[in-house]
Image (cartoon, rainbow, N blue to C red):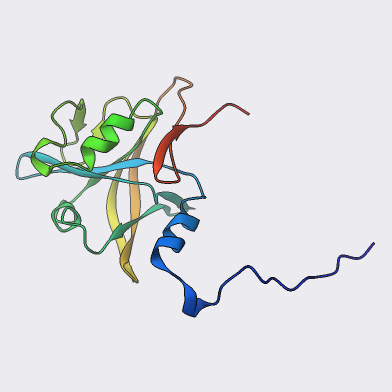
Length: 174
């Protein structure tokens, strides 16, 4: 039997892309959540991002997309090294704190810093010490490619924090 293509009538054209509809549609794709952080002027500075992805093994690269309106990214990019922590399913409150007032983001969070200034959370699923490899302007975001210099993976079988439809959830074992 040969599949016959049908004409789609429910998709809108590019001229009809309403930002709210687009955000809702993007939200149907679940993603993991990371903390991106560094020590700046002796204080931890960081944010949460749900746009993290692996990019390359050689060289070892990951990426994260950050809003150009971010008030935190200009400070973070000053650091020679950045820490990335993959958040676990028990980190929903940590994630909310990382989106809160800058001066209180790390108040109740256990974290560590490297001699180069990369900050990672102590109980993440994995953590990376990175440097900025390249920044690419992409509409209202900047795609930041990060080169990895060190990696740590937790030995337990914890599950990741998942961001889906503007909320946090857990990944069920399949």
